[in-house]
Length: 140
Image 1 (cartoon, rainbow, N blue to C red):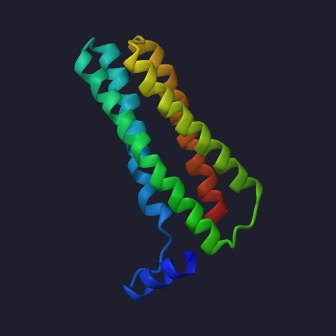
Image 2: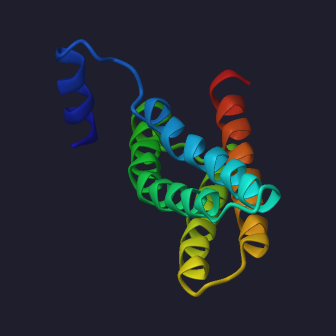
């Protein structure tokens, strides 16, 4: 089934992996949520904190297709071969998803922005680890 999808895409002139073009969506939102959270704290502007929250929701929604595309690409281009980098990406991807969900839940419960910033920074650390391990996997 996966082969059919990639064959169809290739007939349309698209022969690249799907995952890399999607990763920028949650990664950009994670950078945005950290930035807006910091601005909200420093300038004491609740609108920035609210924007950080919206970024976290969008990142959480976007991470699902990114992980799905990553699994499809891994099956197609690396034949599902396990390696330390694949395991790292799976652990970090799961951790990132859990942290994003936690940030959304905590914000709904009214947790202060400074505490949310810690969760946002952990998300940023996971995103950095995912980017690094992905780069090593492809270019390493």
